Length: 149
Image (cartoon, rainbow, N blue to C red; front, side):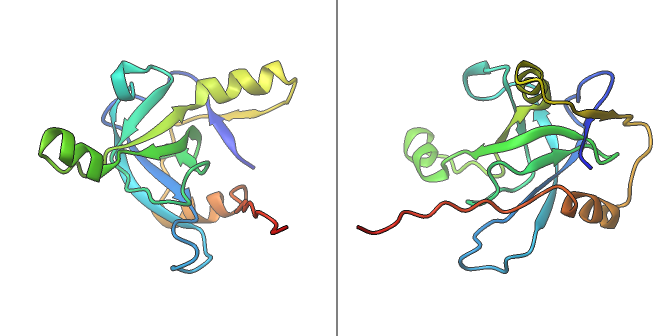
């Protein structure tokens, strides 16, 4: 079961793990995780609905959970910065500039839809291998196909 982090929200500098199914057409169909940290508590243009993280993400990671060191959901992976566009705009190539929607917004949506959720303490840290076992229990691949006429 996925637990949303209880108590205070995540802070800049905290370690996180992002999970998803990146580049499934090229890589394996297994769940993959990447480590990183929270770099900022806001996203592009200071958008406070999002947070910036350093965990590398690829196409196929969007919608995956972002977990704190206790295995609680603190966000949902949404995007990575377009390195090519930023290189043209700034003459610099950004590395590991990625974003996640804050879990507080997910909880708000669940409450509006009258969907129950559980919370968990972030005091006990898990080993990385335990994160994978936990994430496998509630992270699923969702694919969309366009039918030909």
